[in-house]
Image (cartoon, rainbow, N blue to C red):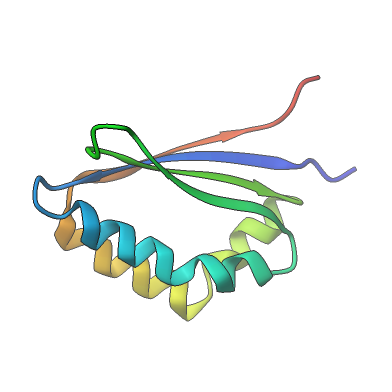
Amino acid sequence: MKTTVFIFATLHPKKDSFEKVSEIIKSIIDNTRKEIGCIEFNLCEDFEKKKLYLYEQWRDELSITKHFTYDYTLKAIENLKDYQEKETEVIKMKKIK
């Protein structure tokens, strides 16, 4: 049985790079939402505009693995490196009820 996977990722933009990090993620949203296996892919921000968050839902682990092979995803990951204080924190979860 395939297990639906939920991802909660925290992005840490440098002080003056909040909008740039937001733009990089926004540039992949439409393509990501069209991927087979993507159920939900949302970008959120905190009220202080200090951190960005990705809330994702995927059909299964294979869908996530495939997501990280697409050129637009790889390019976004590479572009984020110069604009973040530290690496993106990723939490993978599964629903228990």
